[in-house]
Image (cartoon, rainbow, N blue to C red):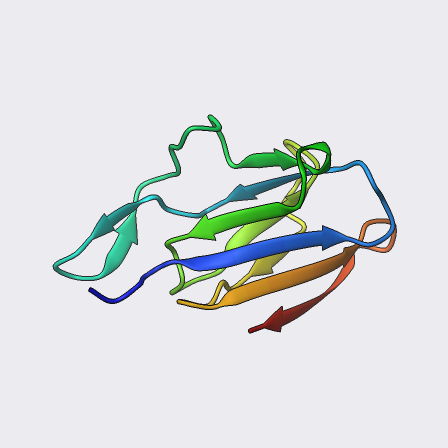
Amino acid sequence: MERIVGLLNVIVTDRSDYSIEITSEFSGFRFDTAVPFSTIENDFSSAVKHSKDGPISFYILKNQTPVNLHLGVGAEPTFQILVAKNKRTTVRVQWETKTYTTTVE
């Protein structure tokens, strides 16, 4: 079976303590059509991670359209990021200026 997920790594370069929230990602997947659907539900209760817990990484099924990356919990969507299928997408963010660069490996 072909792998279907992409890995999204988020690095904030000008802060050591921060939270990231992801929305518009999907956790359901139809194998017959290879199309993700539905909102995320997983064991950390929402798509929020904190830097104090270690590097921020999300496995994303949705790779046809961008996900929304929020700097902070409940914040307005700051960036729309397309997560590549079967690849690692790394987003380096400058929190204060709200700018970012993306690399795909």
